[in-house]
Length: 327
Ligand code: BTN
Image 1 (cartoon, rainbow, N blue to C red):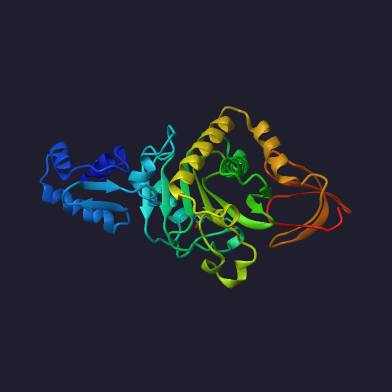
Image 2: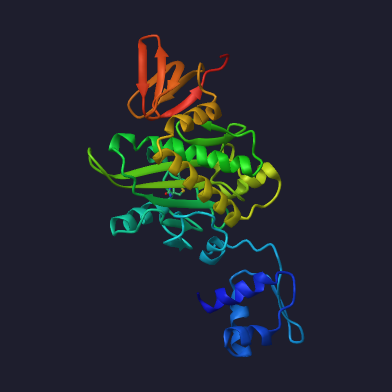
């Protein structure tokens, strides 16, 4: 553990109380001047620490830092985030970074985060707005031993895990919009982008990227999406600690992923279906090639929409949906 992290740990163990410089210096075997230097650096990186020459140092609760130390001290997972954690202040896209890491051998459960993405990727070639230090931009590596045809199921599994996390944070009235958006009052709270490397027979790795609007305000977004995006802060009325949200999210992702690997996909799909309230709805689905209107009879186990149209049953695997009024 690095010196600053050791000092932080001591401060955390005494949160809200004074800890003398002498005590810190003797516990860590460093000079009191070195303690001051590290405390100043911690303050510069954003921690709120009060210092007094007589009393020592005191960590004030309520720090909102997305650092490896803050993530690791919260983790309740067995695999996710337990090994490699990569955090960028700014990067093109965490999915691109995770893809490169996976290509050079990083293990399952490796997580990649960024404070800002300059080329955040969305579905269907879109971009993902990624304002600095406001939200969560997370990608992680999976290496499941499953047939390639089952890979699309993982997007549904992830959507349920993200939805579980919103439930835990009190956003009970959200819903899943096919295939993997999480909406609140028809505005987008979260999106998921799953990418894969493999061939017809086997999967080399899967990168799941999740964007979650946590503390952003409408002004943080480009004009085009100001009306269609929403953040957790806007819904709950208070700032959310991103590391706390991430801890719960990783826990839920790991839990749902293992349920999936243990053969319990059908029950996850039922939960997905309940949270999507899409069955028997009349919708229009459009993608690059085509658009169909019809009644949704099912979301099948590959995550495809099964639509009853005027021209018979259509199975659609990608696109955007719009609900047709009056159904
Ligand atoms: C969508 O709804 O269109 C999917 C959006 C996925 C955005 C996330 S943010 C973290 C990860 N890195 C990316 O470049 N994209 C995903």
